[in-house]
Length: 453
Image 1 (cartoon, helix red, strand yellow):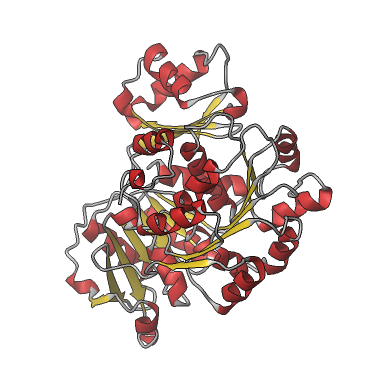
Image 2: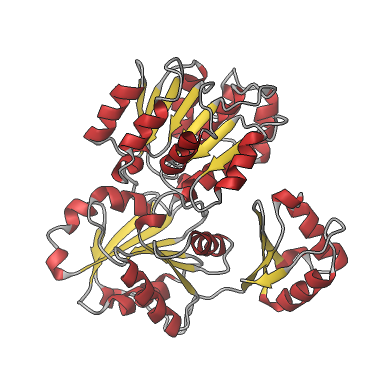
């Protein structure tokens, strides 16, 4: 079903969606958008990568009064990574409307910056429960005019122990409102919360498992102490361009990253011991292909906005099937094909069918391994000490690189613009020219510091 089949969607929105290559609706979008446009409360259960941000974002943006600079929509997310992802997607969806302001209130960013943004007015607030509660206690956030509440990945928020914070935050929102609750799973805690915060909701349930037609799932038995070699063998047999590897412990992520690095692979570990800035940069370099292998604890199993991850490896068997579903959902997104491989030991063999029921059992010694294959990147990331607050746009940076420095556009990768920094992925062959050129050149008549990541 196409977006233009929904009568209430304006043509300007349809044109914007078309420019974003949003043409065919996903199942969750087709089911949710008409209900949300009617003003009904909604419970939607769908797996990660199903297109739920657009499912709630499209009707939400349509309902904003752009002339009234007060928070009209509150979106709660479990993590900063997901909050940033939601904000980024909403800004794209809102391009067809002028002056729609979206503010992100998550941890890891100084409160003063967020307070200053709120003082300038906001239509949509996206935030994590902890930071939202901080602003409410300081009286820097007024939710008295919110007419739409969205709980994104509600099950994850409850898993992280945010139930009390969610209830306290909701107590600041008018009882007369629309509430949309999105969750990948529907445990008893979610059922209890939905009864507390929703009124006569419409319930939509999209198949929560990943079909074998989209994600090829396999499991390999390994011996203890064989993990690093097993991971290397799998990569050298699959020969992917990008790999997301999940482990259960922070120490394992670092040890496995060290072993892959020693074997010649470009790899980055992502875990809770990293500072927020380091986590953001690790995710960014994985997304822009500077680092093709990311080894993560489950902090990255949700809210990771990276397209075209070809291979997911569970180097550690997850503790329950819900975590497994979220992990492998990082590949095979939006209908594309992906591969998910799980490693397990003999003493985990009985548990495996309940965790990964769709995984086909295989043997490591049957892999067709290319020992010469080593996964690394031809890209380098450079950082510019200026971003949205400096009025920088991707086009400004691209113009300087191509016109002033003489870099061919084909050698320039993804350009990410944040509030105070901008990141550019470029081919290694031109990295020195770009670095030296940016140090000497002016962007929008200003000089900016630049450094290699």
